[in-house]
Length: 238
Image 1: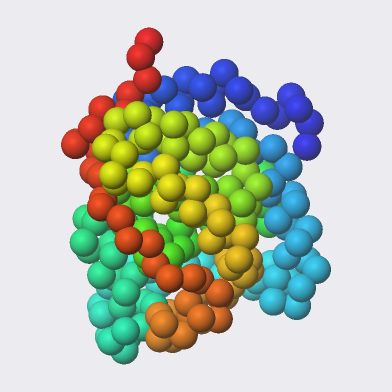
Image 2 (image 1 turned 180 degrees about the horizontal axis):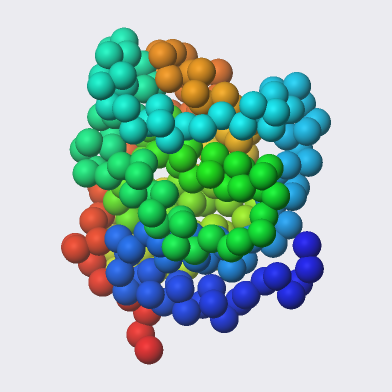
């Protein structure tokens, strides 16, 4: 990874736009791409070191058709990971296709097949991570899961967003909400959990969510009051 592949000015511009419009998800992917650093290569190297990781790299499963088939998800057992995921995306009014559209706007050309698959895998599992960790899709929940993701993936762009979100949430929310503590706790939970990147999520959707959480060493779910983007002003002054 050459330092010339980093685009800090692009990242800063996208960061300002993201905080001005927190629901514009494509800015997240632009920051992640601009400050990718060595994260993808390091994750690929780690995947190659385990049997489960090597199998994922060989098969390169595509989660998108599975996660967009809501009829099949609804047919899964009550209490399963797949049903809980469906409940989450329907409650938030989001879809797996929406993340595809957002990520494609920020993607560079000329990547290897493995790197492209890993990018897609991280994108498509994001809301499964939400489901397992118990974070809602509000500003605090997104900041906390980004703190979790930064520790698990090492992506500098993710860490940048989480850090600025921690700063801004502490300034625009009431101290009693403990927004900053929830974000910091996301990183602590990431240290104690198993590595989410090499989990065969496509084969785990039928499993009970409680069982998945135990196996992944996910601690008690955080209790917090969600803060939605229309409730506060997190934009950075010019």
